[in-house]
Length: 404
Image (cartoon, rainbow, N blue to C red; front, side, top):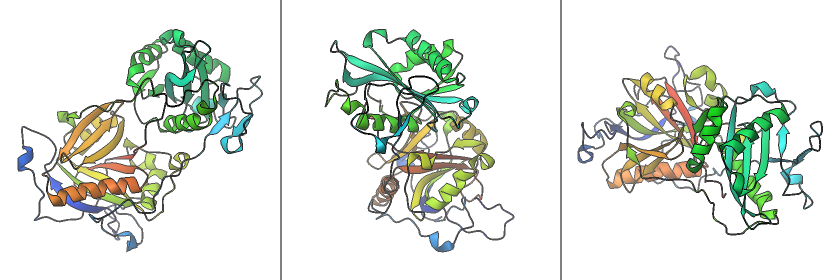
């Protein structure tokens, strides 16, 4: 937890590479050529001070490599066969699956220990699969889950019925078959399906949320590719996804998202876990991840890289960021900038810095630390880089897109 200002013992565990001043890409204020490191003020930001042994206070090094003990270990998801009746729900764990499992079956599952009314947000994918039907046409599939995977539904469709009416009817049938209410929100990650999904959601008074923070869905699709699609009799090996994910050129940052100072920082994994354990009590703005569900297996002492952003208007800044579905941050050392990815396909030049051998090494070290921690990183917004408190906190992860 963060120590409060009235606590006598302050252990500074947020570590820095260098402290950058006024580096957000506000062309009206500064050009990139005028930006530089403030070499006269080499300070360690004191934001995350937690009651942990001081042995963790090891500074980040520019020669940090990806050889650290920090590989990400994924959970194997639960495969649930479509029951013959609503009363029969057969649960088969993937690790126990046999070759007799039918890859053509559809799933319809609600965890009996889960309160159906508590499932207010769905993650949804509606897309073609690398599978051909009897007509030689690609099969489409609807995949729905919630973040905890208490809800898991799949349904196949021929390619000639793909429209918002089909999707709306399928959403309604899920609620009727499993006795769950219509969700308040549905997250989806394919920009090409936005029109269909948005129309279906609006007709059902559901808020559609374009977002790549569909992490449970991402991992489940990867699992289904490995254990279901490749075993389907119509599987087409080497078939490319029909609707690939966008990665557009980064745009200029909107004025309301400007910060004033930023710093590369790190926290030990143990501290990150502690932060997210009581996230709701600490932060009004931000987002966290279920690390256990994601199967993150990182040593407790591993340093997780992050970006600390300071602003005299930190609360309004955090509030604006809170509505963006922040996905990830990338340090692009070739262009001397930081890239902020939000929503489905929106990328911003979040900050710039003067390229030197030192700054390039530091940006590359930060990216190496991110890869070494399985893609985990975070964004913290505060009033001042020397503050003990955080206004907003986003735990982020880089995941490869699903292969379908």
